Image (cartoon, rainbow, N blue to C red; front, side, top):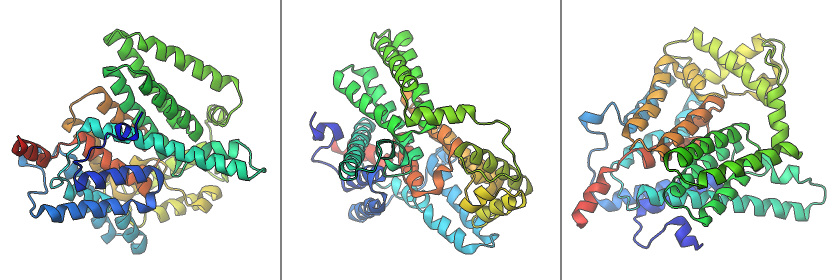
Length: 412
């Protein structure tokens, strides 16, 4: 398959297209150079020469993701006012600048590529990123005799960004692929799907594997009972074989699942020094709930939520999570602690408004579902690895850029 076809690129790309392509590709590979993509978007805006309204129309003002991105950022600014730790608060405002910049630019960007072409590009970026990760792992293995396979080809050492976020994006790429297969059954797409799912196993992400099973189950049921396609039975057999192999042979993914399943549900909430991922999450969820209760409506403030969580765990003598200064490991709880019930409602509205603005297609529903599940187990938008692509995905696949419609009408 040619790279040009894989990325669905053509010669008539706009500068905004190039900027978005840069943001998507390097968010999966080398996040430090992602700001170049935003610079391209800004240059495209200046080259356009004029700006239309940056806000949604009156009819959609409360049901458009742009509105809720901007309100969320406004709440962060307000939350800084009643924060004691101003420096941490300013860092968070800088950290979430994508929530402000990209929505403000969005209505004025000339994007020539369709959603289907962006889906292909996202798939291509995910596959290329996996090839890069495997190449780096292979180089490390060939040049260091002391490194075990498990320490190179699996887990956090394998990925170039946080494995939880990376696994989430691989799942989204697989959703795009399965939607293409729903329309056109071709062997090349199954090869790409296999590459992505093998890469997902290499991340050893428990939530990633869970989402993979759920996504495959939905599409298999759709193929078998809705479309009456034999490919559904083929996928079902492949899944059964894959799960059998994971369960039969020793591998990091199997070990992590076994640890999760055998984790004591009665994790001590006091005098606990553990930083094991399952225990740490339970401790941080409990701490977050208790801190939120004390600051229910407006939260602790943009700059103080981390200090408050650390203080609570110190009072409970949970020294492991105190030392690591862990966040809530649940974005909904993290936002509730930081911005209270008001912030939590705004965050939920980001998902709801995205659903309202979508075409309600199966792939769109699943992308939102996968993101929602990941928000339940990670503070997803507290790092650049989560913030940039979350914002980009919602705007690119769950909104309609009005300038695109106008430019296409003018071209006709």
